[in-house]
Image (cartoon, rainbow, N blue to C red):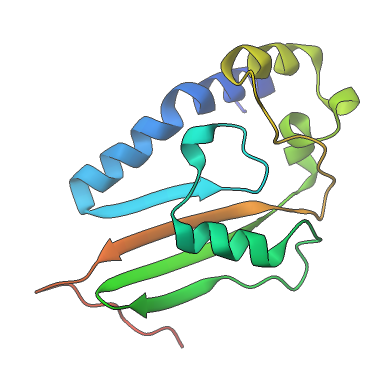
Length: 143
């Protein structure tokens, strides 16, 4: 955003987000992602535990929504809600509030974009991570 504005940021997000997540997984063994009930990029569809959480929350304000920190079997899961903030509506707000140059980038990169129409304070989706536990991998409990 600081180097080129919202249209440039949307271009970077569309070209680099998936490769960043793949690099993190390859280098650390931790799968990371972001997901939503209204996906912009179908590749952001999360694993079942993330989709279940999103469906349980539904379309609602983000206030009071809590995330997840748990171990199931030999896999640790962490999830944090994504609340919509004022700047987020530049790319995720109602269509008439998204600048034309941003709409053009989004339309070209995401022809089936469903991630618009949000207002500040809405629950946009979730950031998530999961890692298989094994020898030498320990999840520290959170206070």
